[in-house]
Image (cartoon, rainbow, N blue to C red; front, side, top):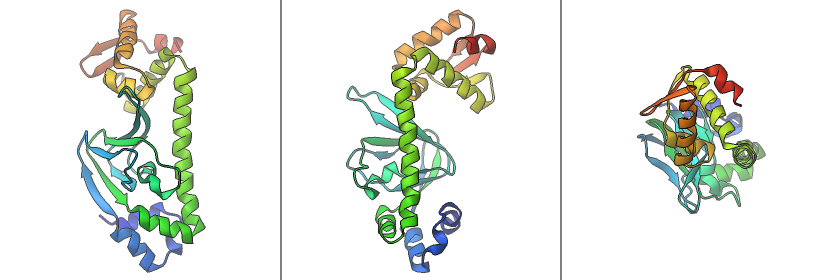
Length: 221
């Protein structure tokens, strides 16, 4: 794994760093292999490090007081997450968790090394602030949707989104996965899906949702 090559392509500030500073980042970075279901980062007091996804998929989420989790963002190949290294920025500490949704390989970048460089180079600080801003904007948009967009519409949009992403009318998707992604309870999602099945718009089987009438589904939105 050529970590230095990845950072050179990913970090616009890379060339302004000294060779010593570049080596500091590379040598303090860990390469981890995660299995599906592994907790990669968890909790308010944990500062795991800044994550970069080489391959695979992860999910960032928060927990409600009743133990229900809500997906805030998804991490795919070539994406980066600063919220797992919240201590890099004051007051960014959050009750935030990340789990692998499939087998993944990630880089864990040491926060202290980046923090020192942020104090020296404004370009470094701005780069990571921009990442944090984008992640929080996505989270805000999700919360806004949960508050103001009806559940049925969020569910239908999720089905259309997955149809496009998977490029198939047979979706590999569980009721629990949908509930986490749209901020609802599994039982509520199951009732809504059963209603759509009764209308012959979708079909349900274990771990699968078949879209039978895409035009009717779109009309409901």
